[in-house]
Amino acid sequence: MTFLLMALFVITAGGAVFAFSGGNDTAKKRVAAVARPEGKARGRAATPQQDAAARRKNVAVMLKDIEKNKQREKPTLRRRLEQAGFFKTSPRAYWITSAILGLSAGFTALVTGQKPLVIGLAIFAIGLGFPRWVLGFLARRRMKKFTTHFATAIDVIVRSVRSGLPVNEALRIVAKESPEPVRSEFNKLVEGLKVGVTMEQGLVRMRESMPTSEVGFFAIVMTIQSKAGGNLSEALGNLASVLRDRKRLQGKIQAMSSEAKASAMIIGSLPPAVMGLVYLTTPGYMKVLFTERMGNLLLAGCVLWMSIGCLVMRKMINFKH
Image 1 (cartoon, rainbow, N blue to C red):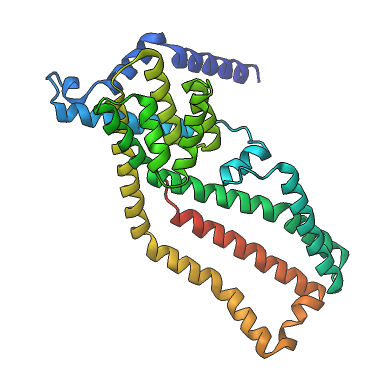
Image 2 (cartoon, rainbow, N blue to C red):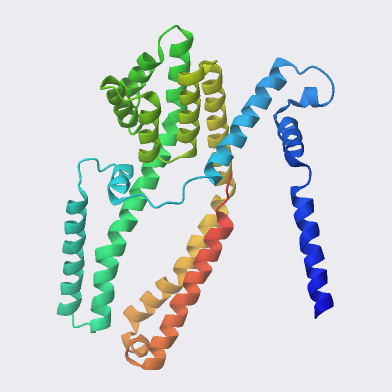
């Protein structure tokens, strides 16, 4: 036992030395190797096309880093309502609506003669689960629509800045001409700048209202430009190019996985559809699953395994890009 403890101690110490050896020099070398264009890494001057490709690659890497380093803190209910587009809805109205839905579901289950457990589950699912699912669905749909039009809005800013307009005027043009929800988000940013809110504070609020990696990188670029200056049009142009490349890749992935998604939908819907048809034709044959204890256990097992199968198929056909 003593020999084993000593061996484990030596292995642990060696791993610690190996992990922390090299210091900042090793980290600096890795950063320099990643940031250096391909042509320079091989000992020759990089062409402008290679420099542009390297910058776009760096933008893509930074977007992935932003996605990985998202804050895991749960947003407040007020923030979730804003993300879903309910700017004028208060949390109190949300809870009142949830309570009405839950009580309605419980009353319906009580009238139909359900058991107390079923009544409680109905109140919990409809009163708490369903409103939260609706908020999440609307927020995801709004973020997807925002990302679709965000590249065009960035192009408007780039052209405006290159033509000599100030940044605030370029943002005002986007707030007037862009479709929703880009218009509302930039409108809030412009209105905040009018009343004395700094660019950094306005972008933080925009990031909270629209928590996407694209908005996070846009906020970083605009904040650095407002404090230290720099070529804003070039940075935003690279961001717009990366966004279009990501959209193009997403469309290609959807086209390639459409057959698998259709097969998964058919396979997942067959058992409930067949069960419903059998119940309509011969109800007595299916009533055993609902009246007998063993039938209830079999039905619960079927629901469990079908859910696991659907989740596995969903995991197989969803690709991260």
